[in-house]
Amino acid sequence: MVSAAKMHSFEEVANHNKIKDCWVIISGKVYDVTPFMDEHPGGGEVLLSATAKDATNDFEDIGHSDVARGLMEKYYIGEIDSTTVPDNRTYIPPQQTPFNPNAKAFEFLIKILQFLVPLLILGLAVTFRPYTKNDVEYTEIDLLEFQEGNIDGSYDRTNNSGEADAPSFSESAFRNEQDGFRRATQAIVMRLRQHEEAVRQEVPCFGLVVFVFLFYSSVLPSPVSPVHL
Ligand code: HEM
Image (tube, rainbow, N blue to C red):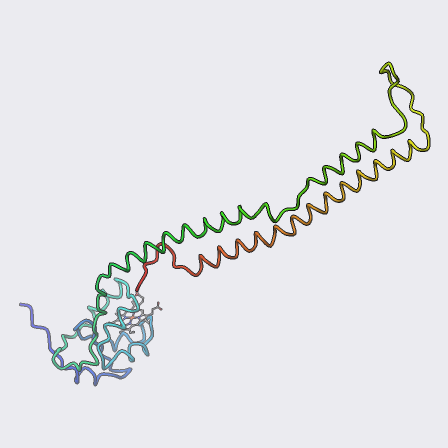
């Protein structure tokens, strides 16, 4: 025959609040955890702080394992007489928040924004990218000038019949040749400077885009996290 569980009043249980005599109330059941004080992985002090009240909330908040729940049976000594438990010592489970249709709509809006805003930032970056670059056309003109300078030399490599002629290294031809090289060198240096300038302008632009993106994604909640209103 199964004997009826022993009923304990709150006052009686609350008196067992010492290290050598410790009872706790969890989910309407009373446990004498005195022999467990030294072994409790959370420490004896924690168990002591859970006395003289309904400790269900504290116990559940820790997220005790099935092993811990199995161990409890060993220390079970009876039931608590719920009529004797003062209201402010009773664990009241959190109220289920009523369903709010606006919350779903807001969550949906956030998800849409999370996809649209990065796309918008990317679109803006791509649109404005050409304006941040230098126009390289006049570099090409410089190169053309160089070619013209070369052609404009006072010596001609072909004779009238189109056959190769021995070059006459007159002083002006040499000067023209030199001039052509100087222009070519200038054109290349200018081109390098333009490239350098373009990179200098693009790096902060790109950095800004990345910063805005990262800031945005850190401010908004993740798509998997629930939105609580
Ligand atoms: C008969 C009652 C209890 C038993 C048998 C018990 C058993 C255990 C066990 C076995 C663990 C190791 C972790 C696990 O397996 O979950 C643990 C951890 C712990 N318990 Fe208890 N426990 C009891 C009551 C309580 C109460 C009333 C509190 C009050 C707050 C509490 C607080 C803790 C804490 C803080 C830890 C440490 C968690 C961690 O370090 O991660 N326990 N308990």
